[in-house]
Image (cartoon, rainbow, N blue to C red; front, top):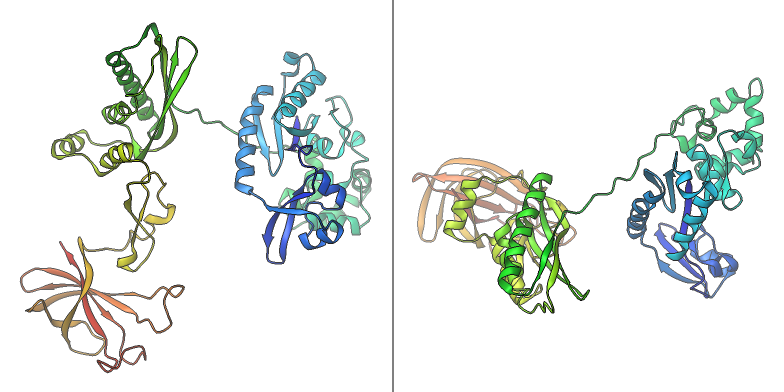
Length: 507
């Protein structure tokens, strides 16, 4: 069964279009019924559409949100079959093999699906066919609620559909139209000739992608060759609950049940190799009232004691009424979390709490916007390699890209100038003076050249050459030369000579 779905159009009486910015200007992705009536359609440039419909209102589209909604619809559509697959940007494929009799037949199944989508404000075109390609073609270009059985001649039933029903790229459709092939019947007749299929094969012989080869799409539509589909596999959220034999009202009993739920949740997360970032505790009272307390964590957590401590402050104002009969704990946001050594964790508890646990306790007491934490930032410049952000915000994905660089154990708040003696103008240093003390250098590693960030700095900013050095007493430093002789970027104070700075101390 194939479904093409789009948001309900009856709510907006004014012309409306969703657009995407391109190199040639805004392009329309979709339009509501009023927009279609005014002449706007998908693929048209916004400027052209507004010449036909001046009152057309344009709103930027949200492709990521559309795909997320389509994923949720694909998981929800499994009510009509064992698996479903997405057909972006607005379609679903559902396998209903040996399922239709559970709904009273294929017609009743289509009616049930149309009713459920209509309740959610979605207009759909539905079709049932033996192959995914035939179901897609009928749902997009066939009559409403069309059903094609396995005994029917697929090629004959779909012969009058346009070649666009083969799910081909726009440039391939343009080539077929120039060849005079506008319907599936014409392609079938060409294939049936003595040399017709060979002629099409020669023209599209270099196109292995099914969307660029009409012969492959035609074979998939008829069922001559299989079509691989990627089903959507919904991920179940970790959830544990307790149905109590007798309702509870006292805080001690509530904390005891919460501890049991936290222990169960930790075992579930440990089996999945995950840690919780957001937890939701639901309490069902005897009178039907439901109270939910949510908790967001600064890092993935799999510690029952830590979860109980954080929830303890959120349960002080709970009104148990005549008693709570059911408690449920759900991890609505979980991330991968590797196993940790027990002795290291025990030592951490003995010497104090971790940074993430401290942030969690502070944000629970002071609010999510009262605390900030340092996170790594992808910049080669050491002073810009970290930023401050709210603890509940996810860390940047690219923050670990620069970890292959060896950095000193301690960085100074500000790089301090030093006096350096070296053999050649661009050579490594031999001796330097810092904080009134002379240091003889016995080992040098480098240089590591770091160029300025051209998108932020002026063109006169100088290069940096970093060295890891060791003096006669075994102390190691991280110093850099700011600029090169003759680069034309120095100041007049020192005659354009490079400056030297110490920026870190190595172990």
